[in-house]
Image 1 (cartoon, protein in one colour):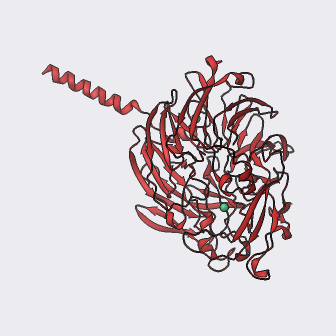
Image 2 (cartoon, rainbow, N blue to C red):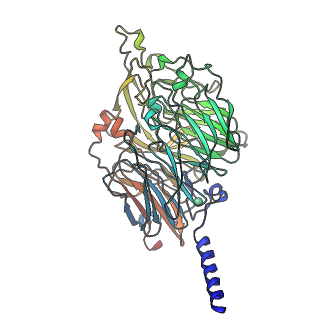
Image 3 (tube, rainbow, N blue to C red):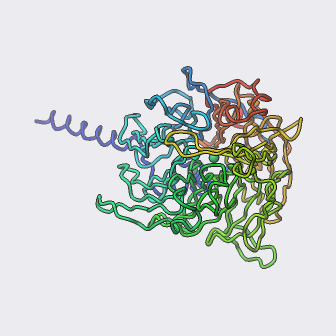
Length: 588
Ligand code: CA
Ligand code: CA
């Protein structure tokens, strides 16, 4: 009698040990991510997306001792653009890779724990390389979006698929590559496909089950939906049908939400950037074309739009306004009052400071040197002061009706800033913006919508503006409205930034370097050659009293595919696919 009893006790103890062995990611872990230095549980190092760490063991004095600890290859023949931000939790790193792959690694040693390779169908249509920008963690799940427009949730400890949901039809041009946002137990994702006339929208699902909670379209005229007790119910039209779009064009209006979203718990708002209105040829769609090329603030509890701010109304240059909206507070220099603001370095070349409680423009100023499409942003109306003759001409006005007047426009459609995420350092009060100086010849052509076909109505060639550089990491003072310093780079910058309390800003270059700059002066204090171009944002965390830095390396993304003259200029860069981890030599 005694023996079985003892055995069952041991068995019970083992079962308990088994069930508590792996920690689960809670809502508190997500909310506190920016403050907890032992993990990185969310894209942006926190939902607000500041990409700031309070860690300072690695600082301007010690960074010279920063050395690699391990590197891991994503393997295979799939060495294409790697734009992913790693997540770190409970001693494990979760990192996505090209072709919709995800790896779990031991964060200390780089040992592979498991991998998942999503089976992609023939005929996917990602516009801008087969990239992925990162995963989300919630409960016992790691969740990521795939190039065939699905969401996959895996058990984070075993790599087994727990749920899989289709966002939309890849054959119609939909894809997904942004890191999901986690808000209040929901996984929030957008869609890619602005070059194919998709219906831009944000979707919220129960993170544990994948079941839809709400859909909010970002093209004015579309109905939103909410699910209650499994019932799909109408949740109000986005805006007013045909108020800013003529005819039926809103039905294929684009405004793809392809670069993800941020969330601010103080205002309880999700901020999502929206891409170009479709097609690119703006003469086909008179009006502002809401809610394209904008930041849209959505209440996560209702799925409704609370405010919107359009950075490029009636966009005619593919100035996707998808750039991240990063919450920050500052003291008004005149009144001393704390202003709850948000910063956005827009693809159109202007840096916007917006009151995040109501969407009102506070300030807007250029963060690139050449802007041809607008003289500035009128602070009273919040609208651009267009230079009308620098909009590509209407093909219908030309002699043969086939090609409109070509204009030279700066920035190019690849933008003053593109997908690469900026960082905000509350200690310096500065944003660190990976900026690019380039322009394009652009012209319009007639086009009509065909499901699954490119829907541009435009031609273009991208050109560098200077011989010696295209990229520049710029420190932007959002209150003074000026650039404080810059560090130039020959190739266009395409990777995000990390900034720390150690007075450092880390970022990568297509030439392969991970660099650390003095956050106050912009002086380079450290660099390391990763073996391929860096187009991803670095992260940092601490374990066992030591601070670690990680970045993914692998050249690719939109530049080699769309870059015209610039693509030729940087065609010496080699592809790759690996993650690098660093710490201080001997911990000092
Ligand atoms: Ca954290
Ligand atoms: Ca676009």
